Length: 115
Image 1 (cartoon, rainbow, N blue to C red):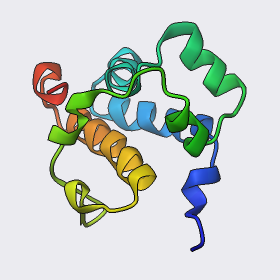
Image 2 (image 1 turned 120 degrees about the vertical axis):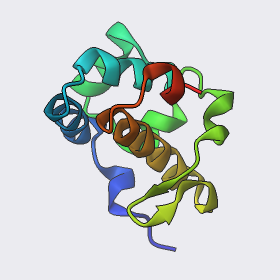
Image 3 (image 1 turned 90 degrees about the vertical axis):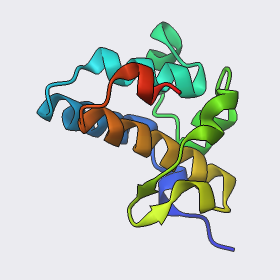
């Protein structure tokens, strides 16, 4: 089974897009970082290291310090697909992150985003 191109894409390629999306809607880089920390456990120097080393998405999630056990409460549609119905585990993790960033950009309060 061929892997999805995004699995080998560096997280550092998408990270600025997450920030830009949030900032266009009046949100901040710090809020994006808070979401990443909540979902994966990456923060501060450890997140910076992932960005500098151009860690791919597959490694980013495989080596995440602590995947949040509440992430399975994330529901909804991203790119026309319900995140709770995605069967490929890595793709589901990526779409969880996308969904949280979407919610941030739509103006949801952080308390609601971070279930």
